[in-house]
View (cartoon, rainbow over the protein chains, first blue to last red):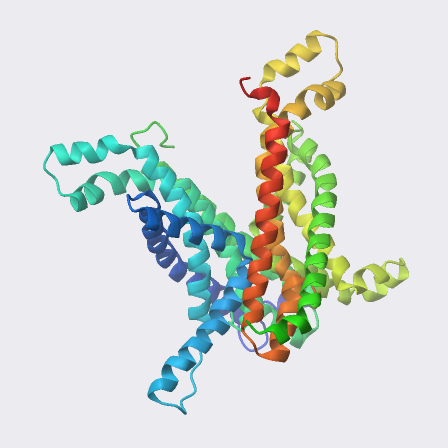
Length: 238
Length: 228
């Protein structure tokens, strides 16, 4: 038993530093994906609540497709499809050049697109909950639409959408593990490599799961703090 | 459209759909069975019993399904001697069984949370009314509370099945030839990107079909709640 735990030490004899590097990659991928997914999700939400019918329709199709596809399939489509498209684009300029899509970027785009599909639904219901009156009040005060959005609507939007976005963050954190399949050295792939060397799958996968669990628990604690902070003044603080 | 490719891999993709559907069907049903005792434990006032169920659901909901799959599939291999001695190695040797086991354990945690929320959403007065009529708690739970709770749980159950359907693509990573597995095989042999797009259409069709079926089920089961 002690020998097992000694393997988790840092330095040349233990796998602790490798695991930490993998976990760091997982966190980085999730953190980088978040703003991309949020912005894309917000734009799609705007398309869905706007006045233009064809934009509404486009937003609905996007949501249906990316909520219906397995994340792993979306990832492969972006990874291999992106590679093919990029290859063709580059071949126009330099026919002999070899290009590849980095698995980190492919993961970020694929997970971000899925995140955006779900996030747009959260934003749409938040926008509906805020109501027309806030925009009309902004107009009545002579504010520009952009100003109304930034000063009046967005702060309320974040409070209303936060619980749903928080759940999506927890889902995103877990889904980063899929990127290990396209050879990104995240926590799960690092563990796979360690298992290949040590032949102790049960112990090391259990350790990896516990690291994911810690990330999830820390996140949900942070999220509840954030919700309390945004909810202050609404009788929700603490 | 590459019809030659479709002719060669089309039947295999259909086989893959059947494998995907059986993984989802089996694990959702087994998970539903497992979720019942978990829910009872979660609703128990006994802190130890409650804590065990809470730890179980937190563990399975807080970690990636892919990592859980690796733990079961590769982890079982490490204990081959032990499983052989108790005569269970035939089960863990097959990746399909490992997948169904992992998915069932995983969905049980989510389903237990759905069921717990639904049971708690039924008004306390229903329990009290049942006990005032001299109905035992077990009968009240079965005949009074559960029918009302399941209606509340219907929609989240549907979402959970859809999530399982999408999640089942993970099976392809441990050599199971589900729809995703067949697709990856076809791509690695043909290098034709189209197969991924067919797989996408098939997955979307499955999810959409399930949504329609679930919508019809929900309308039928809640017909007594609608104004005439």
